[in-house]
Image (cartoon, rainbow, N blue to C red):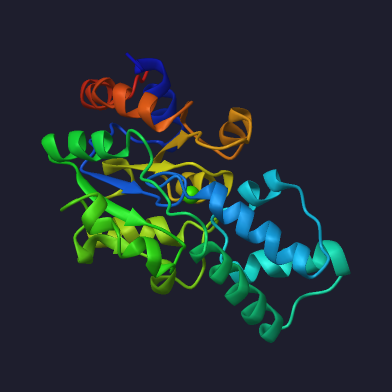
Length: 249
Ligand code: CA
């Protein structure tokens, strides 16, 4: 199962095999069903300053830092960069609106995925651009024991956020694994781009409104229509990794 897809990945990256020792896992939209609330908070903050942006655009910005999202919108709307002050004020307002939204739920299927990874002794590393403490603080109660404090890369630990590969390269460093010893689990195009650029096998889990093809175009090696579907397929996928090596024919 998944053999030819895995062989294509190995060939493209010039790897002999892929032995998964760590899973590098995004947070918003992957572990938590938080993206609708983020998008709604962005939309409201911007309409307060008279800027109207379609909801689905916020899913495309996902993974960027707050400041770079605001800067991008300023360039599109006003044809100029935002000032540091504008970025700070507007992002503070967005954070405030997000915190006032109804509580975000863990993504259905996420706990099963993490449980399976633990069973087969694959390390779990959190890789998020977020510094949003409201969710980071909940990880231990929602997913007990899944992410030890030294197995987390957050927005505070990197200089360049996604789509740069830096967050995932940093995660490999702290997990002590090479690119062909881990998999990246992401829901958004920019996150997938980051994982792909790090050289890891990148799973796109489509939990939002963006067409699956955008995840493939960003470099996803495989795409699942939901976290539940991915959690169900994960044992077979891991079996595929362990039993497939590069085909040199
Ligand atoms: Ca995400």
